[in-house]
Length: 167
Ligand SMILES: [Zn+2]
Ligand SMILES: [Zn+2]
Image (cartoon, rainbow, N blue to C red):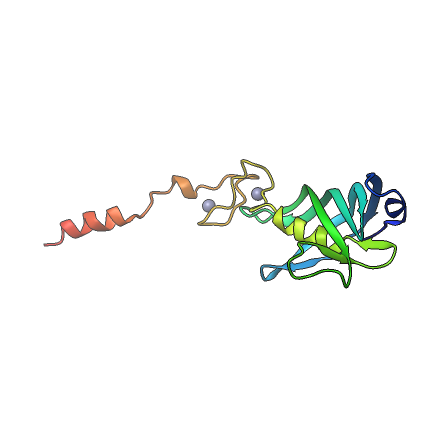
């Protein structure tokens, strides 16, 4: 995810546009894996400062995941934006809130990933009103109905009723 900062270094203070597209490798996350479909797109501007660059990004990519309710595959688009500062490697002190760069290019991958993780959806659903799976028989209730809900339910209340007759 490398972009050239050559132009921005020549005209300090002026935002220089950049664009990057490419595939994002699968990431381990929360004990599982995050995979992405197709290519990610990233664009923004690079503004040169003395020994530093301020880089904005507008990112979009597609999360290849499964519905939290019915477990069907879901392709969930994610968009996010960021603004990060990059300092020449070797000049960063622990107080600097910045990413390092070397030479004429900036590798945006770490900044991209950090911001991606901040913008991940809490849950992915195949559709907002997904009915999920029947907890009794496992039928996908988006596709068909089952008769479980029509059966009389055994509840704790039934058990209490039964108790009160036990003498
Ligand atoms: Zn679903
Ligand atoms: Zn059922």
